[in-house]
Structure formats: C-alpha cells, structure tokens
Length: 193
Image (cartoon, rainbow, N blue to C red; front, side, top):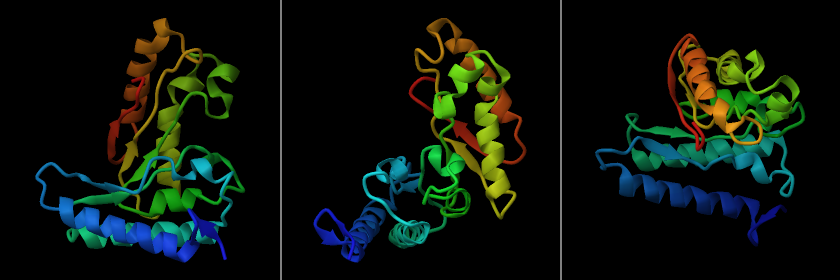
C-alpha cells in the first residue's frame, strides 16, 4: 500500500480529515473566519509523491467533506488550490475538473513565469497582462456551475520576469483585465501585486 509520512495512505488521509474536522469545530464560531483551505498548491510535491487522478479526487473529496463537517455551516467556504500545472499539464493528476468543481471556490495562480509566458512574450505583452483573465476564464470553462466564483489567489510581477519599473503597470492592467470577467471574481492576491 501507499505510504505517506510512514502511514498507509488511507490512515494519512483519515488523520488529515480528523485535523480538518477539529480545526473547523474550533474555528467555526469566529466572526472573521472566511473558511478553510486544504493547503496552498497541494500539487507542488506530486513529482516526488506520484498519485493518480482518482487518488487525488478521493483525497480532495475526503478532506473537503471533513472541513465542511467541522465547520458545520454553509456560510464558511471550503476550498483547495493547485499551481498552474493542474490547468496546463494534460497528464497531471490534479485535473482542471477537480480544480474547477471541488470545494466552494475555484482558485487560480496565474504567475507570469508559468509556461514561460513573460519570457516568451515580454513583460508588457497582452499575453502577460491578460494571463489572470485567461486563468479565470479557463476555470469558468471547466466549472459545471457558471456562477461558481473564482478567486485569483496568487499572481505577481516577480523580477526578472517583470522589471520593477513595469510592476505598477502590470498590477493595474492585470486587475482591470481580470475584473472584466463575467461572474464573480473574488479578488486578486499575491506577494508581488
């Protein structure tokens, strides 16, 4: 059987589910709690911990259900996030469908270095300035519910991909372009915006 941190996979998932239920119960009454996210870019270590799409789906379904159970109310969000390989890699076990359909909100991380976008097209190119908009529309295309909100959770203008002098222009244009997407876009965040 598969092993994670010395535990059989099913035990590792059960332990994480217990943790999320416990956290949800402990935090659910907090007035400023928005919700629980399973983790940031859960697919980052998939190269070192191979899994199938079915295993990832089981993992996400189990943990999202545990988080929801712990929170005990629909007013708090439960979600997960994956870095861009989930959207652009045909053989990636974190699929676009999982990203766009599991949890309450779809998160996207349209970084300008993903796929070499800024280096291929230039820091002020339409491709770079519309990348967050593209990521949002791609997420909406995979969603089953057209009103499902998308959260541009991470984006940015990291050097050397975007020169410091171009960062304000990048931030302004990225936000304006993404805000033109149909439906609900929850916000734009990132270390460099």
